[in-house]
Image 1 (cartoon, rainbow, N blue to C red):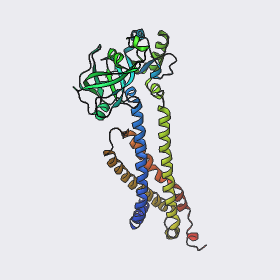
Image 2: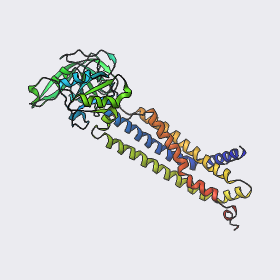
Image 3: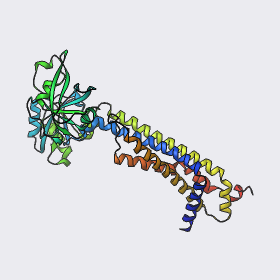
Image 4: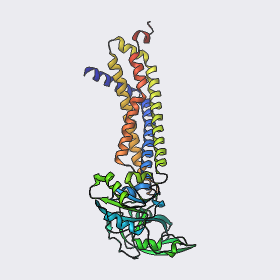
Length: 386
């Protein structure tokens, strides 16, 4: 205990006496912290923008058309597939999902959105925050997600106009907003939810599609009676229903075009930023140790143990790193308050805590060489008596 107290005293006393120098290092660490936290938030935001709707589905399995490689936009199922899936023993619910894109043009700045057809009270239709769900049939009613509301200013009760290419001409459709859901971004776009028949009427269509008014689902979200039986139910669905492939939610998310590559790029940036932090901290404290070799020699000559010297170096590194991370965290919070909702930054609690823990670890890791060097200093050589 006495050794620890002495080490802490020596470490903190030096930090205070050279506070200008150590503050500069803390500010460098703060900037690294700012960068790492923003990279983590950007990665989470981009991931949410791509996967949010799929990740929030009240389902455990997704049914695709065979040979679609688990890509939602490449899948188009027959209507009777929905009934077949619902009849399979162990299926609690199966909701068809119809996906497309469109553009809201009745606002100051036209907004591109994902247009999703879903059946009320079935998997695929998210729970509402406000308002009510749309009526079935060709009701021309729409439920919007919070992202669309924030970016457009649209409220429940408003009428919106969407532009949709029908064959070779652009047509305009009017929809009444009747409900609001939590954020459900899909393919980096806010989401509108409509009834399947409405979706078929207003979605962009080719000349060939105009000849058929039947809505064909892209996928079917399957909720199981026993969520633990994912493997068995997947095999059962594949056996009993022809021309389909089945994937769980994580597999579906990873199959979204560009998702894995995007996340890999962001994570690589974060790792390299941490490596830069390790080198910066390691280089600074190595210079610090080299400058005070004689002082360490005196400490050892008067009886200080290697444990005390090493602990002092560790405490000093931890304190300076912690100050830098605290400053960087505060700067990150202040900067985040000024960003508009259009910028995909999401400060997720768990990912931010992991990033902060990694930042706190880079100090001791970066200073490891200097700590070892300090412990190995020989008193006589340090004082040039040998």
